[in-house]
Amino acid sequence: MRVEIIYDSQLYSIGNRDADSVRAEIEEALRSGSLHWLEVQRGEGEYTPAHLLIAPGIPFAVTQALTGGTSPLTED
Image (cartoon, rainbow, N blue to C red; front, top):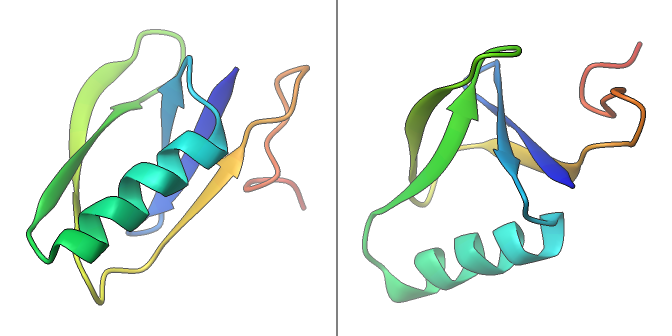
């Protein structure tokens, strides 16, 4: 199970979570009114940890990665 996120035109992922739990975390962060750093991974194969700033006005997309290595965010 993996969630994919597009943030600033870059693809990131979160392993061992589903899209609903990530969206719930983001919604709670936005409701709180304070800044929130979402822990993600960047790269292919050997991932590099990264943190994305979640705050009002910052656009991003969240989706559940499809099984079989395909991504709904990068398919043509």
